[in-house]
Image (cartoon, rainbow, N blue to C red):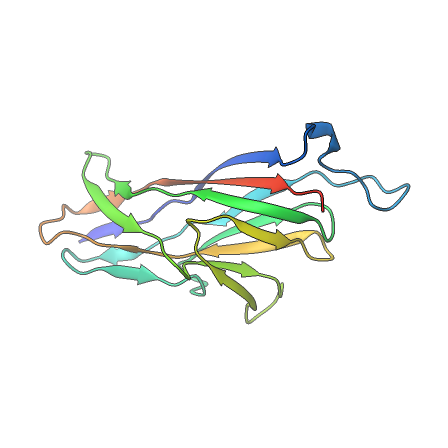
Length: 169
């Protein structure tokens, strides 16, 4: 058996779609200081014990196993979110475990509550979203690992990067 935890180690890059970075957080309300963007990885995407030759899928609405990101910024701000996703998880000794992401493996949670309500999306493509009135957006990430029949056991990990752009809309 192998333990596949597609570590959603967050390499955060905050960018801007505006010509000047200083203009990225322009306040819409006079006298209100805009809040800078923050992206937080709250939870890794984990597959648990994976058996050789048997694919394992984690749906983005699986609160125990799906990866969880939070984007914070100015209330009602419009952002573009892009993921850099791995093709494989890597074991410390170099073995690779293929991982795939597809349509519906991302979930943008606009509800801020339980059960999550929002929009399923393909994390391989950019997501355009509006931060809530509290300036937050939760993003859940699922995926599928496909171990070979002779897949070596042990822990496997990979990093996921997220880039958030302020669209200034």
